[in-house]
Image (cartoon, rainbow, N blue to C red; front, side, top):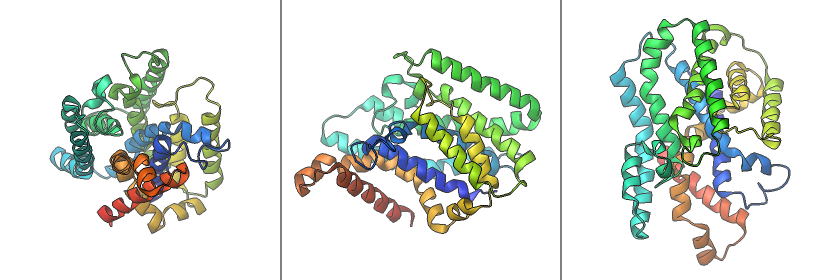
Length: 324
């Protein structure tokens, strides 16, 4: 089962994260009307984790059991080649600059850098989230074959929601602990994947046939997310707290038959969603190769907006070449 209208939301999230990293000097994104969104756009990594949990359930909903061999091969071929390409590019750049972090390189290749606080952002910084996702993919067959198939949904819901609440409490209590660096620890993101799994299970059992026009409610939830980012009230959203909005948004998008869904299901939008992983994982290598300094030096372009757009268009062109 595939819910194509969700695919484009990956693109929106990935682009927001690229802007968070590289576009905050542009007048397009640092004006008072939208700057609060892009200053906090790292929360969309949390959206990725929740959406991943949801989509994994949907993808395997027609299977009684997951075949480990086939599953792991599919995950590897889908994720690792582009992930490794990003590492390779950064490895070459670090050799040229004589700034190679060998231990960081090994951890990144093994996809375990997020377990080591001071190495989680080495080599290719966005890769930390793939290191977290790697754990989710690793345990999913066990979750699906053993827990989700044998524990009643009511009891499972209690366990997962309690774990989500516990994770939020721990994260807020120890948010400022520089040693733990909980914002990138896989254990502290597990709640997001599991709550996405739970949403997927509820969707399959109770909600998948309740299709209607939910455009208004989708826009309303989007507005509530924007308000939460504008007025955080000292809350920390990075590790799953926004699931209270992300989950209903994902479910409503999945059963919506309104104009937004028709738009998001258009071929061009689905394609942009399909290259969103590449946008996310290759942003740092491409932006490192074509640095703002290089554009300033060789093309005499200093306007932050133009510089950002040049680099972003190049990133999209590279991905079109890879995926088209």
